[in-house]
Amino acid sequence: MKTRLAVALVGLAISLALPTFAQQKDRVDPKIAQQIRVLGMKYDEAFNKKDAAAVAALYTEDAVYVAQHGTSRGRHAIEKTYASYFQHSHSINHIITVDRVNAVGNDIRAFGTWSSDFQDTNGVPRKDWGHYRWLLVRQGDTWKIRTNTTRSSNFNATN
Image (tube, rainbow, N blue to C red; front, side):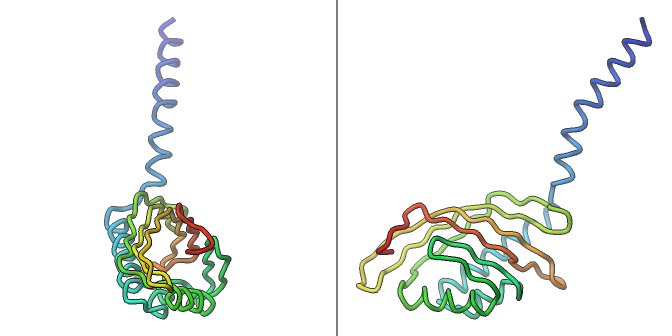
């Protein structure tokens, strides 16, 4: 009877410990999480300056940017997409919030929200906001965006 009880307790302990180990596997070092938040601030800074080249420099050469208006593949195409956006909409205050950062092997997934006050081509003030998901890879001592999937909560044909 004592053996059965001991085996049952060991089994219970293992079953309770496994989810904890799984969470730790996905856990990101706080220093890396801070680096990702700094990347978000650099993105906002370049975006608010309407600097398409600086935004694109945050992406890998083979990056993919997916939004309601379409998909851009490669850093050069992504730069052209941002340049076009900056010609048609004048962002006043773009803000990214990094809500969650998970490790995926050697890569990082960052999830969060964004908001933007902007003026359309007619000078009409508008607000937009939404969610994004980044797949980030380390290149040298920096993190780069390999995939940026963004969705707008307020998107319509006139935005």
